[in-house]
Length: 636
Image 1 (cartoon, rainbow, N blue to C red):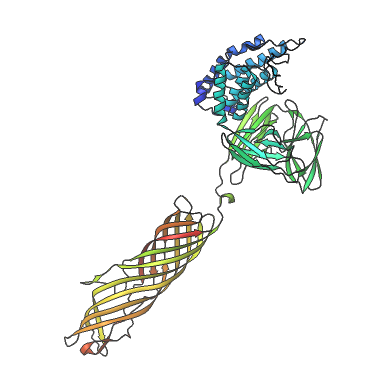
Image 2 (image 1 turned 30 degrees about the horizontal axis):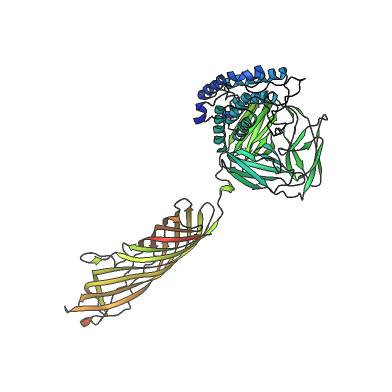
């Protein structure tokens, strides 16, 4: 028949802004699309023959109005009954007049011309009208291709399947269409609605999909969709689902009976009988009276052709009757709103028309469109619609990072850590090594328990309890032993073994960053209540020149320090509530009064009798410790 073959560019390329090809400001389609559509139009030229001749090749001529329809060929089986709404081929038993054929031809040719201009949407409308008047293979396949190029994949799939079902296509045509069907089925999913009330209306992404139970699967393009199920006397059911290509998404839509309701009465001002839409669902015809849930609803009228009314807000109050008198008039323009996120509410001229995609007719002129969603900054746009125009408006909202919806819930976090202590020096006069003395690195260990209340932002406030022990040795330092009753000390060298032990108690403030490898920043402050043990021995020279071997003696001094412990950790989660991490803590000790040697401890001093050491500081008033370690965290 010479119908359009699918262009190679259409297989590999994508069509951007396909539904806005006929919009102001978007008519300058990309050149690759224009050239592709021009090629489509040229390839369709030979498809006009069946319309002008009045028959398809290989099909019997259509009967004239006064003739009887030809009987089907005897085949041993009765010809299957055909759905009256289904497309009909030229061989069907419905007579088509020459005037109808010519009108179909005119719409078909207009569709070809629009294709050449890159106007896919208007071209599709012409092919669909031509097909309605006088169905042909050309009009059916062209409509299917236009639907595919407009990314209306589920409708394109239905149309291609109708082509195979209703027409005798050549082997090459069937192969090409079957290839299209296979590709589209990978991009089309199915919604399986169960549990609803019989007779309930089903709306998917703003489109009426019949009543429950549906007589055929509800096919939708892959992606997010908003499902709405409505029946008078029940609360509306609404849910957002994500549908993957080639898969079926089950949706259980149980409707609950209204417990609080009011009544709404809708009349057409001039007495016309038209459909009444409540929240985008056809509920009846004017005049209509029904029970609805309490709250605001959107009401509109819809009649034949362009007849209808713009969306109107209808507040329904408990046990009250609300009456709306609307005027059905010619609405010369249409608007489709595609919001992102997909479940956002759409407002037309301050009327909430529902959630998700909205498609409806409006008057020509200016209209204000708003899109709202929790957690996003409200977006608005003023659109000007011309007579006969269909505009597609896509509004993508920006995320509001300060919105409560993005705030994570608070939690309680507990963690236990163990650290290895590195102490450059415990300070004090004892560790002030000079001359020929030597000092060993200070080593030790610490353990902490932390508990915190963390806000959703990650900021946390808590307490910590810990313990530490550190050791350091000094050998051969200059020291003095004071004999009792003698003014001059005995001088010599001393060895000290220092040990600090204590308990830390404090408060913390921290920040926990949830990511692939969580980060923990924390600062603690509190008090160290501990003890310093200094075990000392030494060699001294007595006044008579003899050697005094001072036996080891131990002094125990209380150590009270204020502390700060900034800390950073990086971790990994290994279960829903558990996290293990590694990091480092800097422990800063600040003493109001440093601990000192106990001067009451008496040391045998040989010929000088009994001696004592002076009360020198055994730790400094400012001590730094580095504590690398590991931690185990549990939050709930």
